[in-house]
Image (cartoon, rainbow, N blue to C red; front, side):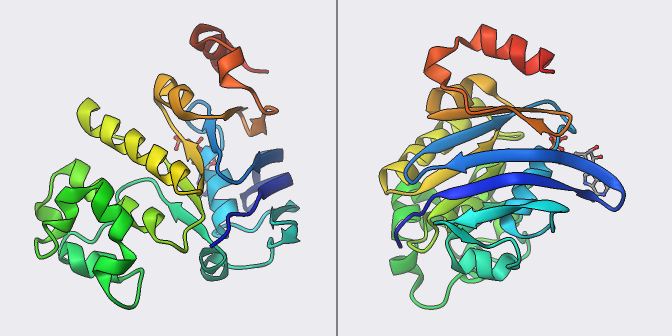
Length: 233
Ligand code: ATP
């Protein structure tokens, strides 16, 4: 699947009468990694949910390859290549790894998940284990495996490193490089600013629902970014 540009244009969204996100603009170019950084409650998950079609915005649009997809639900967006990996593992612990992986695909598992098994060999070896018997890191790898499917072209990740040991986080961030090298684009929300800066081509800061313009992380030191990140507004 060819990766297309994802654009969030003037997006305002919230819950009931609560407006969480105001006039957000974010562009994810094909093959790029974009990081969204901001404090708790800033609206990061809300933006990702609006991109995944789980939340209908009050105004503004989400566009894919120039087509307005704001009215499309999550299934159609997934079919169009947007792969949302939500916060929390999203793995069914009582099902085997194989059963968890089959929830996302039809057909031969080894073919469809070839890149995922190459990137995370341990999950390919534990297909018949109950997902709940795996380590937290391995469960996150099972959750992430969908991102490697050939039909996932824009991978949207909500705090994938949450609660994981540093060595596992290294593996996860190496895996993001594999995604990029395979031509996919990545939009990630991440608490570890240093990790995000290490892999992102573009950073947006978000604070109280306001999203900054695109920032080139190589043009800005972590300290400067942190002071803006903490003192935005
Ligand atoms: P965190 O890092 O804590 O996950 P976040 O930046 O992802 O934060 P959001 O989860 O988008 O922030 O939440 C933004 C605001 O929206 C918060 O004030 C939160 O309480 C509120 N909120 C989130 N989900 C709902 C909901 N389902 N109903 C009502 N308010 C919500």
